[in-house]
Image (cartoon, rainbow, N blue to C red; front, side, top):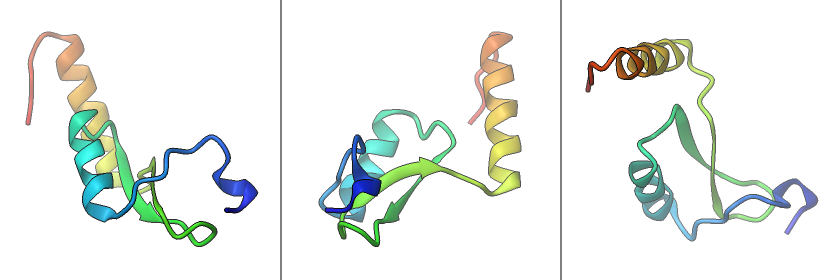
Length: 68
């Protein structure tokens, strides 16, 4: 395992990583396979459309309106 994985949760496969995303409510994260350890991690989703959608979701929650 590489030093780049220190402190990160290692999921055995993509299915496990996606299940973790669902448990935490996605939170603007995505899963990716690590080049260093070969396991799956969760990380920031850098896609602008996803970021904007997550900001809108959080604002709606703060205002008491839940959006899907």
